[in-house]
Image (cartoon, rainbow, N blue to C red; front, side, top):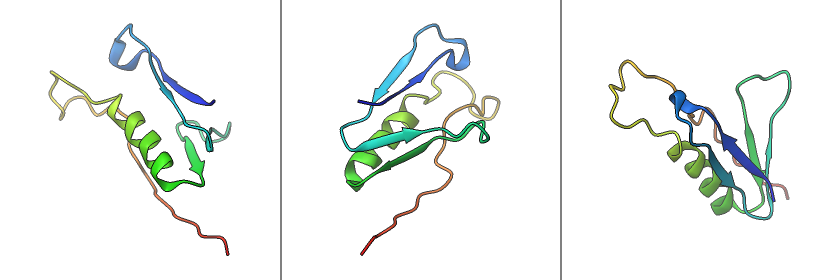
Length: 82
């Protein structure tokens, strides 16, 4: 099972771990510093992992105009193989 762990987000001591269900792969290329790629066969499982990663970094009790840190979806692509 693969997982993503968010550490020291906005200085919080608590780490957040997001486990991916079977069939979903999470990868990070060394040359792309701040990008994660989530892939899988089941669209619902991939979407669930992406949503959990984004929700784990929701900023609470702070002015959103001043704190722009977070995890955002930059590209969503659906590829169908015949």
